[in-house]
Image (cartoon, rainbow, N blue to C red):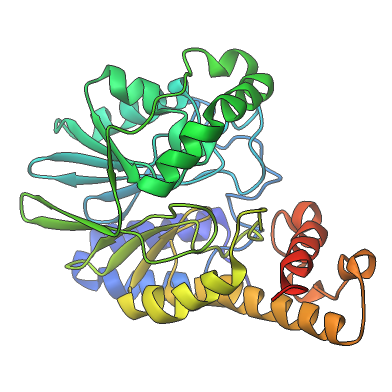
Length: 337
């Protein structure tokens, strides 16, 4: 039986009240996990009408917060908040993970941060070069906040940023006001370690995965990873033209899994654990690649590849939008592997 919003809130409240049992309470919660029936369902247009944010930030573990986005596509109704906007509160300031999908969305997140802490935002980390990670950079830049991204993500946004911006303006209309292309101030190649008071924050690029410059933010003391788009569990992962599915599997097995994270905040969907994201990311990728390999071995072509059996995953949000497209893109690569 799936947890609904009310049940989860009761569990979460109990965890907040009894911090000594926090890991146990969260462990119970994540084993059951949220699903597409949960409060981030793509069927719910906006669950926080008082703000442009799709949902109000929740404290995942002490001092680590996330505003969970809708698990469907970016729309006017969700104001482009269809990914997770997270932040870490430290004794020396706040680190935000993801610039947000627009100027106004970044501003709305900042409003929530200021209601939680008096600490200023010191750094914004863009988890990749997509619009929902970088289009809010213009707001943060105006506040004098430094912005960090992986060099490949920055290059991707520099090359495609104006196309991404025009698409957002068309989709978000007045909710795109103030949104401009703003590149990161700094880039990194493999790893950047930050010491913020007594909190160690490792900004990592573990290897090829979902999109160029995929970035993970690892808190080794807390064993929490803000995973970005290397990890999915409530919605079907999208495979783009520049997605390296073979590399994604290798990165997962050789690097991401080795973090041995206790808590996972994925790029989309609620905080969970490694078992859940492994099931719906690694297992999905290996299952789809195996089915496409079998299809190719039997002499099948692209036209039929779109319809390999993916019924095992049909309960995930965005299945209808992505399943056939994913299969086609994997076929186009694997027929030459």
